[in-house]
Length: 245
Ligand code: BV8
Image 1 (cartoon, rainbow, N blue to C red):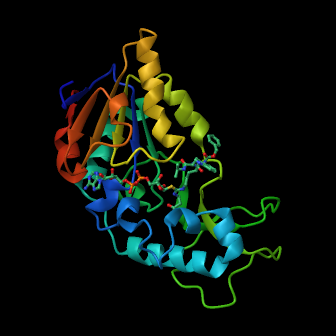
Image 2: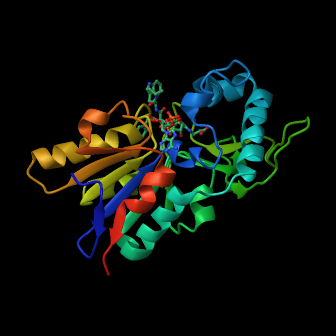
C-alpha cells in the first residue's frame, strides 16, 4: 500500500491517535514514562483502585501532567490531521487515546476523547448529577478538592478497568470507513488496539477497506495492518495525505 493517501469524495477516514502523535510536542509517551513516575506503574496510578488507595498521589500525577501539557504546543502531525478533517468534513472522524488536548489546540473540530480529557475534572461519585467541568488547575494543596455533594473530585480520564468514553460512534465508524489510520500507538491498550482487527475482519468478508499504521516503530498489533509508515509522525503525517479537490 502506497504510504500516500488520496483524500477525495470517496474517502471515509477514521484516525486513531496515541501518545506518539504528541511526542514531538514534548509530551512523554507511556512507554517512556511507564514505571518512571514516583516508581509507580502508570496502570497502577491510572486506575480507580489507585485513586481509592491514594487520591493525593493520583492528583499529583495528573497535576504534573497538566503543568507539562500546558507548556506544549501541537506539532506538524496534529496540523496534518486538521487539514484532512477540513477536506473530508463528516467523512472524517478523529478518535484519540490522548488526554492532552493538543488536537483541539491545533484546530481539530470533532475529537472523540475515548480516554477522557486531562483539563477536565468531575465528581468521583458516579451517581452525582454534577457535570464534568473544564479545570486548568495544576496544583492541589491539601485538602483535596471536593464536589458540592461532598465526594472527592477526580480527573475526567478513563482509567484501566473503566469503560472508554464515546466509543460507540468510533465502533460504528470502524464498520463503515474506507480507511483506518492509527498514529503513534503501541497497540497494547484495548479496546482501542482492537479497532484494526475490525478492518481485517471486514476485508476477510470481502469489503474494500484498508488500514495503515503511522509511527516510530512497529506496534504490537502490526500484523493486522496493511502497511506501516515508520517514522516520527510530525514528519510523516504532513506528506501522507494528498488532498484532491
Ligand atoms: C476497558 C487515560 C472494558 C488516562 C489510559 C484487567 C482488568 C480490567 C481491564 C483489563 C484487564 N486486562 C486488560 C484490560 C483491558 C485494559 C487494557 O487494555 N489493559 C492493557 C494494559 C492490557 N483496558 C481497559 O481497562 C480499558 N477499558 O477495557 O473497559 C470495556 C471494553 C470495551 C467497551 C466497554 C468497556 C480502558 C483503557 C484506558 C486506560 N487509560 N489513559 C491517562 O492517560 O492517564 S491508557 C493510556 O495508555 C493511553 O490513553 C493509551 O491508551 C495507553 C498508552 O498507549 P499509547 O497511546 O499507544 O502510548 P504508548 O506510550 O504505549 O505508545 C506510544 C507509541 O508511539 C509507541 O509505539 C512509539 O513507538 C510511538 N512513538 C513514539 N514517538 C513517536 C511515536 N510515533 C510517532 N511519532 C513519534 N514521534
